[in-house]
Image 1: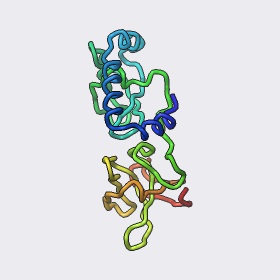
Image 2: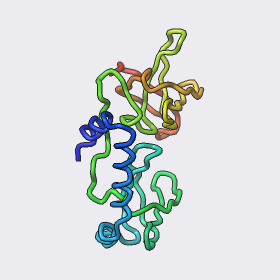
Image 3: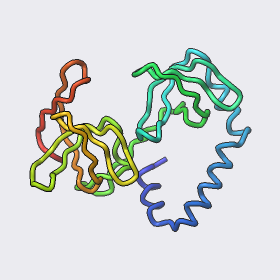
Image 4: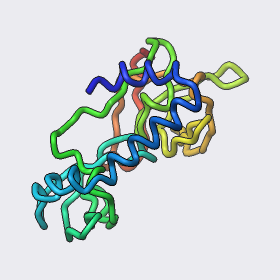
Length: 179
């Protein structure tokens, strides 16, 4: 499925159309005939990835337990356990990235927690940092000095390269050039 095309089409929909579509999708997500084949492809100990809507990215995990309507997983990166619905599991290995609609501006759909970005502050200085949370209107970012900023998506630009020490725990950016 082309998420870029779908996202562009949905931008044109009315709020009522989006609500109606949401109802149809929710009914399909709860359909036992659609869930059963998915459930049969899962087994305890299996490595999977699932889509985390708050971070807007795929998360690598291992299945701990399969339940009636959900699956208990342990994230590989932090060891946290989550009880997620079957439909969140990405068995087909689908690419979930959505490219920004224009080459100059980023939006919430095209960003993920952990993305490196830059922005220009009101005083005209360029700042660079890593996204730590995606809110509806603003991204929460930790900059290279360790300060936390809330920046509107329209002010962000992508950063092409980064260098980290300590296996990626510290934020030390080597800025080559904004995209």
